Length: 351
Length: 165
Picture 1: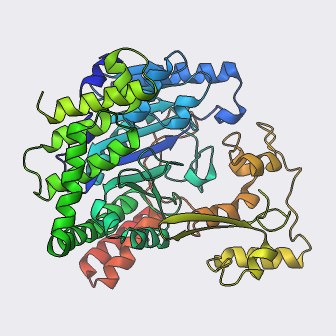
Picture 2: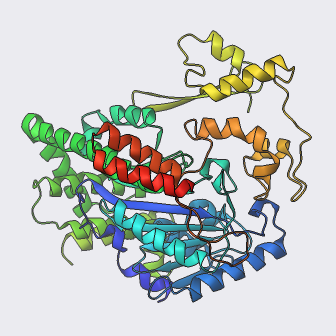
Picture 3: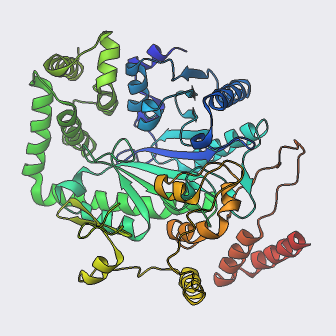
């Protein structure tokens, strides 16, 4: 598998067919691990950092964790490739922007990614479409076991798995669910979700994680505390209590929109479709917002002639690095916006 | 980080969402206390309260151990406080006392790991029996009793007995 093979389609997590996929885009679990006997990266010399990267890379590739594992050396990779991996949620923004020996292993339809030398030596991630937290936890725990077979992880009986930042110590687990909540946004009820999440000590973030604003009505909700609670407890609480409540709430808002504001709703959705099918220049944020409204319209049966897979693919393939990679050249400003508008028109007009 | 109102170090960080806009406030203790309606430390866990109480009476209050240093990686407590990242696994032992209140704040009062454990430890390469998580069993036992599932409670009690040997 090559990196350029990825640009033609969306990853498994954007398949849009998982449980609760009308509101839950994806379920993600990541584990932070560090190799015993090495300093954390803040206190690693360049040489130690390289040695660590080589050691972990070898283990990851030998362990045969997922069929067709692709390893990308991020120190060597060009900017656009690193950006592409960020857009596909396979690496974090800081990992793309960092310096020094580092990489990422990607496998199994992009459901598995292992960042090497990010903030911790290993950041293992499983990303699945729809609400599949239990499945994601089972998958990642097996990968963790397989890695642990070859690597000694830094562990302390009291503190658990030791991480560079004390906010990740213990289980090292971060459970996040990406939600699409357009009706709660339109009805202004979204703030109640924020407040409830805050009370439950959960973090609400935008599409690309830490430090990003919520664009296109997408919200990432994740746990913050990693100490004092077992992994399956956190997963269970999320998957059975917290997320279903928010989904119910969104469904309620969608029903209210249909019964009380049907014309305004159809106007919103039709305008989105009209712009997407006809505009000649399209910015990234505008695209996300219009696709968000269209996605809601399709799910609510207000639009019949666009399928969900197309919309989900457009979310990803219209991102800057994807457009540039598909066209094979650097695109900027209006040229990029025009290329984006052309691509969307072609896809939505069935060409 | 400096206080929004004066030049002292900000220790109270608040995020408010008003009309869809996120407002962040960074204040020092005095300004936070002066500002009306700010819930200053309303969630301070009991352990931290006690620790502060003991420290206040032993004349240690407010003194951060700036010179404290990990003899393995050279990380100082002051460096860590500035950057938020530790230098090596040994820092958790070197700064155990200082880290505890921070961990309690970050992890909803928790100070001990519950959950998955590595099957082997310490780089010996020897497989050891996966530790039975007694704390978790106890929690489940409590749940079973609350739910009046006495059959399960009895089983769990036996498991705990066995694990504690």
